[in-house]
Structure formats: C-alpha cells, structure tokens
Length: 527
Figure 1 (cartoon, rainbow, N blue to C red):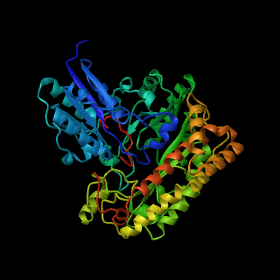
Figure 2: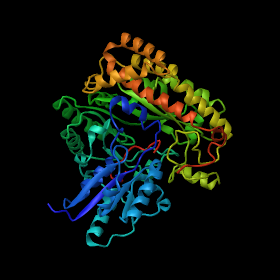
Figure 3: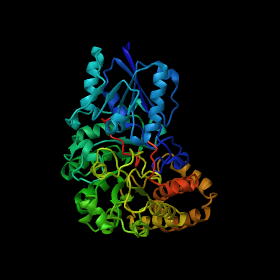
Figure 4: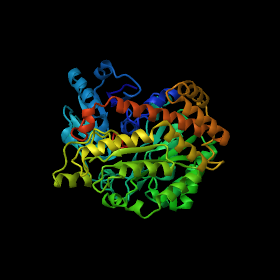
C-alpha cells in the first residue's frame, strides 16, 4: 500500500518521580511502566492509507530524521510532561514539520501551549475525527474542541501493534470515563463528567484479546479513574473478564483505581478477585474528617476507612493509596497523624503528595476567587517545591513536616513493616493469577537479591526477606514485588531530599516548574 501521509505520534518524557518507578525498572528488566494508551487509541482512528508511527521518548530516542520524515507530528502530554513537550515542539519548529497537540495538558492549559499548528482538545473520538476530516480535505482548523461526551463503544481497539510492549511492565486498558463523586481537588469530573460512560463487556474483552495477541502477558492496568463508578455495569464486565481469563489460563494480573465503597459491595469485590485483580489504588487523602469534608470527599466520611481497607486486603487485593497534605483544615499534628494512619493501614505504596490546584478544578477556581493562586501546577505533587497557592498553614511548617512524612514512611524499617503486615493480611490462597511465577520473575528476584542485599539498607532487606519467606512461603511473587518497588521508593526519597537545597525547603510553594500525581493514562484524549 502506498501511504499518502506519515503521522509521527510522540509521547514526551516523564521526569523521575515516585510514580515513574525508575529505580525498580532496571531490576525487572523494563524501560517504562506503561505505554501511551491514548496515542495507541488515536492511531486506531487514523485511516489505513496513512502511515502511523509512535515514539515513546521514555523507551526510545527521538531522532531528527524521524521528525523530518513526517508530514505531521502529533504530541500528547500530561502536565508533568510539559517541559519535554516544549522541547519537542521546538525541534519540530526548527525542522519545519507542523505539529498537533492534544491530551490532558493541552486540554487543561490550552492558552499555555505555544508553537503548535493545531490544538485537538477534549476526547479524541469527537475532536480528532473532525480534525482528520478537515486534514484530508486540506482545511484543518487551528483549534478543535467539543462539549459532547462520546459513547465509549465508539472508541476503537488500540493499536497495540505499534507499541513495543516487551519494554513495558504493564499494558493499559480502559473500561470507563467519568466519576459520580465531586472532590474539590480533582479534575476528572471537569474532563469527563459525572455520568460514568462504559464500554460493552465484549468490547473490553476484545481489547484484552488484542493485547494478548501481541504476545504480552503479565500486568494489565485498567486506567479508569474510578473503575467501580457504576457498580452494576462493572459487575457485568467482570463476568465476561472472568470467562476470558479462564479460557486463556489467566494471562493477566489486573490492577486499577477505585473508590472506597468497593469494600461495601461484597459481590463486586469477589468478582474482582476472581477476575485476577491484585491491586487497587484508592484515594484515602487524610485521617482528618474536617479536611475530608472541606475537600468534598464525602464517600470517605461515610466509612470506617481502616476497616474498609482491611476488607479489601483480606479479600486478596493489595490497596495502594493516595494521601494529601496541605488542606486548609489540616491541624498542626497532621504529619504525625498521616504517618500513623498509613502504618496502621498497612499500605506499602502510600503516595503522599502536597495539595495542588490543577486547572479546571473547584479548588483552582476557589483559590483564584480568594486571591491565593500563584501559578499553574507542575503536575507533580510528590515534591515539596510544588505548592502553587498560598496555604493556611505556614509554608516552612508544611515543607518540614512533609519532608519528615516521606522520610519516615520510606525509611527501610517502616516500609518493610508495612509490607510484612500486608502480607499477613492477604489470604493464603488468592486470585489465580496473583500467585503465579511468570517468565522473568526469577531473573528479577535474583537481581533484587544481588542489588538490594548490598545496598545501604541491605540488613533490613535481608531481615524482611527471611521473615516474610519463612512465614509466607506461598507469597514469593508478592514478597519480591514489594521489595523491588521499595527499592524505588527508598532511592527516590533519598534522591529527592539530597538534591533539594535548603532554600528550596524554606520557599516551598513559592514557584512552579511547569503527571503527576501522574494522571492515569486516559485513552481518547491523546494522552
């Protein structure tokens, strides 16, 4: 086939954060955590007469030759990728290739984006298809936006064949968009609405099949911002996923994000376990009820959070959690309370970030009205230099307290204590996929022992391994997963505070560096 045009789709670099797992990837033999699902989905919308190539700068080098060979460069980025995106745009301008940009960052901050020829905002099923029609007719417009929300069943099966999946730890997939809740600091409702839109079970399973046909097996992440936003439809989906997993001998271990009400729907929880979900990320935010109320996190106030987390853990699903410091209602002892809260919850992966006002959120709008907003968020709330507004609590207190929280939580002894407690809470026999030793696991375990045994925290590491393997010999995969992740958290914490100058600590929140909490990859928005 003779191609009419060449589209080069570029995913900019994500800086090293707690979410990048930079220090763990070398141990497991991967280059990045996940490929860009959004670009793979956008590529599936392109007619076959166009030649599409995806370059993920997190796993491959972008060359000037690749840019020069393209008729059009399409860039997708989250806020945290903003600096890398600007550099790519500059290269395209120098070489003379037109640029289109979309995804969460351009959609949220379109007035900040410079040097692009076309802005394709919002959900790609609406705006990118319109752009393609105009581009083919030779009359593309500078900006494409839409208020309508597309039917998720219109989303094509992603072009997994354009991705080198063997370079990634997990493959992403999407079931729904939208969330029924309305947290003040979250931009999901503004991006995708309150109504939860879902794919039909057969469509979702077809995407699992497409990923499976590439030869990839292992971790699969359902990137929904709230996988259980519609309990009934999620249950319908899980029945189909279970049937597919059984038929294919459980090639995937699943993980996702969900709200705390998962713990109060036993049928839903059991279905997730049977479908081979091994991890769920839950926004727990804070132990302080006043801060939860002020943030609009009503769903967490109605529950006994510790007991809710225990219910999920005892079912066989690890809970990872998001926590926030910097709410106006935070009391002076919030730092100690967060540490105690997280240790009690037995959550090894506790992503504690400073509150950040993302564009197009109720928090952002309120801070603008109050004259407290200082700058656009960098998208990385896991750093003590990113407060982009004037807080109620003195900033030097927040900076010092936040430093102590992270350094305490990711001290080897505290981290391994949480790991050991979690493993003790998990049932001896869990989902079919979570206990399987897969190809590559043995090599990762050997590299872990060789590297971590001789690290600064080697004695704590070996002590944990001895205790965990002796008490829970059937949990080797879980044990080594936790210690390898822990290597990244411990190294990242040391790097973060070693590289920070004292003046940065004193001036936390004074400036912005313009992912994330790297926002989960969302297909259809060119992210």
